[in-house]
Amino acid sequence: MTPALSIVRPGLLTTIQDLGRVGHQSLGIAVCGALDPLALRAANALAGNPPGAGALEVLHLGPTMVVEADDVRVSFVGPRATIDILPDVAAIRGRPVETMRSVRLRRGEVIRIGSLAGGAALYVAVEGGFDVAPVLGSVSTDIRAGIGGWQGRALVAGDHLPLRLTSASRREESRIAGLDLSLPAVVRAIVGPQGDYFSAVDIAAFFASTYTVGAGSNRMGMRLEGAPIAHARGHNITSDAIAPGSIQVPGNGQPIILLADRQTTGGYPKIATVISADMPAVGRLTMGAKIRFESVTAEEALRLRRLLIEEIARIPERIEPVRNGVEAVELAPKLSDHNLISGVVDAGDWIT
Image 1 (tube, rainbow, N blue to C red):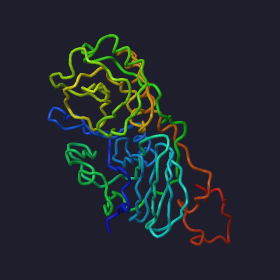
Image 2 (tube, rainbow, N blue to C red):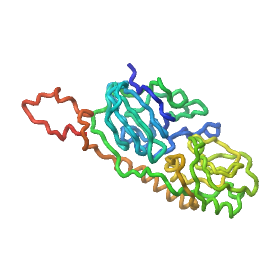
Image 3 (cartoon, one colour):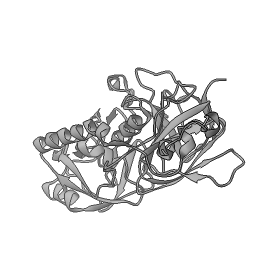
Image 4 (cartoon, rainbow, N blue to C red):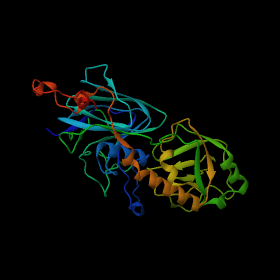
């Protein structure tokens, strides 16, 4: 039997994402990938995977999944979430599991992820990864193009996501400590590339305003609501390339931050561009969150980018074993499998 995670309920929007389909925008193919690549990398580190392995990206409300493998190691990285492990699909109550850690589950156990709190995206990685074929070097789901991930779409009830491993490795579980996945109140950006389509007064007003993340936001773009921005030279330009974090201003004057599933070109002027170091935090923003923008130079953006790279490099250093809580049978064999008459077993060896 092929090892898999069976989807009972898919959640609001659950897709397979990695670090993106890089290098094909000239062909009109979107990059896609994780909204929060920092959290994705951390989830893979906890699961023992390469940093860019495909994982489940869960937005706002999570799925319910059944383990169809001998056992599987799963990690959860992201905001606070209601995560329960149930003994079977008929069970109502289970044991809670916190985020920012890994856990080993057995065949028939159920992962139930409820609503997220304090962030939009949770990443669920499995040891060994999902057994799905890459498209143009990536397993990221591009919903609009219908490629990548699982059948080029978000998960639906009845899906069986194949796993590469039939069982998990025997090691203690781990957690990641001190990783900052908080929501930003201030997002740093560089003016342009179409700064000349706005007056100096309106650019200053943009950076002085507070915006609310609107309900029309999705993986393609984050729609912001606030004081409209006036155009000095009209709201249409000759279409040009779209970078991650481009802030378009369409005719209604309400800015849009373009995200992972962004189009490759666009014809609205871009008042500013979010710096790469802040894009993972932007990907965490929930609907209704309030942000403002701070103007920075390209030199400052490069400095902050280097700090993000250093933070990514420190992820393995933040991983520590889980030694508290009674999840003894997760990693250890059953007590009945051992002859305890001739010796003593240290209880500490059975605690994960």
